[in-house]
Length: 209
Image 1: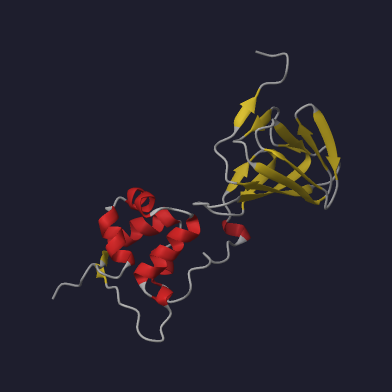
Image 2 (image 1 turned 180 degrees about the vertical axis):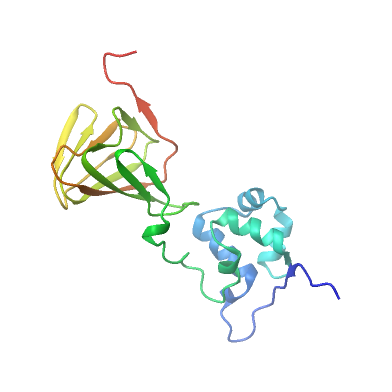
């Protein structure tokens, strides 16, 4: 007898949490991401009718479909099959954080995509390190910048702010900005944007073409 490549779903039993079924967990993760049923179906390469039936426990999912749905939701198939409330994707270990290398600095992803209401990054700047030679902007979101250790300088439009540990500032992410560590010690920071923003746009220094 050939092993099945489909994952069985089950109707919730009396006294069993509704989110303990596969379809209900898919729906809960989808809602937590702020995705419509149609958007998730398109991202996973499945039909909206199939996804609706899966979420309502009326059909089964193949292993391949489950993998695609998990990828679109930013979770593993094991998390979709885990019999627990899908209110979190679990701990993102420091060693596993996606990292962007900057000039004498590193920027770490704290909130993994897909994102719903905000995005969070952490950064570490060595002395002389910066986000780059030029100012940049991204979208038009509310951005909160927080220094968690050391001292850095935030260049924001035509202004410069020297910020120390536990200092914070709020601004629109559409305003060109840049961070540089002009001190003699490492510094650590956090960026929080709400809602999540598109890719960065680099701005040439004034007076250049």
